[in-house]
Length: 518
Image (cartoon, rainbow, N blue to C red):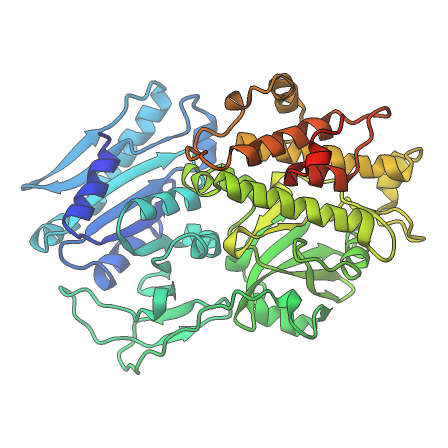
């Protein structure tokens, strides 16, 4: 039995709750501030107190043994600190780095050891590398009966993702005695029994988090309001034009803490609008993608498309506002074993149907003519509440009959394609997406997965393809067979074998005529 499982069982048997603190193992500043804040304000007697250090990707790329985690624990046992190595690590550089980190944590946590012993707190240190920090923190929180998940300031961008994947309270320690909180089930801030101080006021920031700061004069703490899950784009009055001042309020003044990602000059912010999470995409003035995306998304409306909430143009910058996918995208869920197991075969089949329906809407039901998406893959399918799937990333989309080409550069690259041939690009991509759902892995932009999978699909060897993390197949076998049959038909389309998205969708549904059509 692994050490991780032993700790999990111990927590369950003893009804111990846990506090998990995730810190950047490559930095020293802010690490102990998060640990000390947790001990001072949220750790209780008999808790499990897990300090999780995560190394960055640069170290992981230098060592072939990554990804790995849980190399050592510091456990309060008896009268001393005990270090336990779980694996042997061959690279000398890695051993030296972890030895340095071992000594650093030994020195930093030693003063806290006596305090934990006196209050029967089990202190555990785990170190991980080669993993996404948010996913490691999520996995560790789910393995224990976690009451609080505390992040140091370097992991602040993970808070919105974690909000949709863990049920415990979340705190982001920004500086000493200052943290942003998201309280679960209207839980009030708590104070450690061995460090009693009066309760402190809680104020909400623009992200739906609460600002928790130590003050001498205090007032009763109001409960923060939980963000609403009803999509903004489906409410009356949306999409609409936004002012720059409104976007500043949504994104907390375009704060760095709110940045989700940045690529090719496009910056994505996370924020709160009317108690609902949204994404704000900022485009530079020179970006050619803004106008075609607005033109398309302002004219389409479907429950399985990430619809437009609003837009803003200031001259120097342009912005698009979208609903926030609280469960990330399909690719992100594949990267975590726990999340992938939650995507049972019936759920994956439902996702396939919903995305097929969104493509059929774009190809056959848009009043202004067919639209080809051209970017369908697992990273372009977002998941919202109840694993409802939404197609997004319309950067490369083309409106086939529009007098205003959505992207002139893309059309110039393929001037000889007929409309039905362009639509067949989406049908082929749909087949690749079905394959991703079956395998449980992103195919990326290369053809290696398709080349590997096609012979297995042709020979009906589904067991070799199916994601082994999903063990329950009873009652769902036919759904997987329908997806596999549709994937094979979509991936083998050519000039002699035409297939529309409606026909592909019928195969996924299990329509008898479509299934046996050759």
